[in-house]
Amino acid sequence: MPKEFEIAREFEVDASPEEVFEAVTAGTGGYLWPMEPPEPRVGGEGPSGSTVTAWDPPHRYSVLVEDVEGISEQTRNQLDYTIEPRDEGKRAWVRYVHSGIFVDDWDNQYDGAAKHTDFYLHTLREYLTHFAPRPAAFATFDGPEASKAADALEVVGRALGVGADVAAGTEVRVHGPDEFDAVVDFRNPYFIGLRTDRGLTRIFGRNHWGYPVGISLHDFTPGAEIEECETEWQGWLNGVFNQP
Image (tube, rainbow, N blue to C red; front, side, top):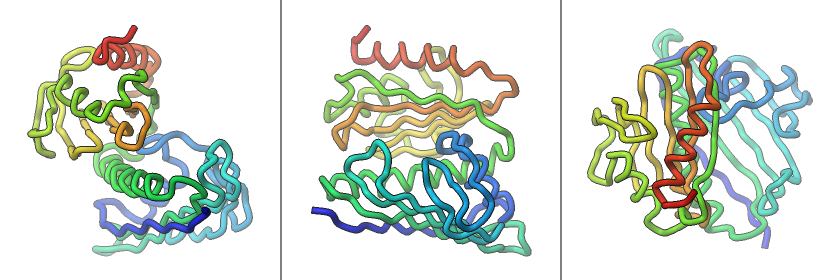
């Protein structure tokens, strides 16, 4: 049965309101995935077939889409950002509200959306604090069918050298396709976030909601060739689960 949902979060970040507004409208590849910037007016076309319902830079931005394309579980989706200055505009306070209608598997869909929201907004803060306004080369991919297993994210974490006992803020030697040093900027039973001087690696434990583990790469190196990194990471992730 269709049922409405709302996920609301508030946070402060060491970035100006203008920088936050630019990130959520034009810089989404730095923390989420690349999307076409919205047409800058109320009623304009937004990303993924949405319509801009609020446009007041750098204070308010909202988009709405109905009959969400490619997502059978959802018929309405709205994202709303309210941004206010703090410390004479050197920092920003942000209120983010994701609302809509799930038509199937409500509890699972809501739990997944709520937990993903926390990780995405954390990644937005990491992007704004360490990398903005640099553009990102972006790649995302899923693990094999075996990565749907209940312990799949923990298997990946141990292979990386970022087990469940590694706390956020820890500097580690990561054992991925090659070895590299990183800060574990996020770690809980559902997600792993790694930050280097070069970029952000995000590992999604979507096995908790019946999907494969996913990885996203945000590389802020000028002229980065992300395709080669994606191929190497995909091969590594498949290998963790002994899949070709």
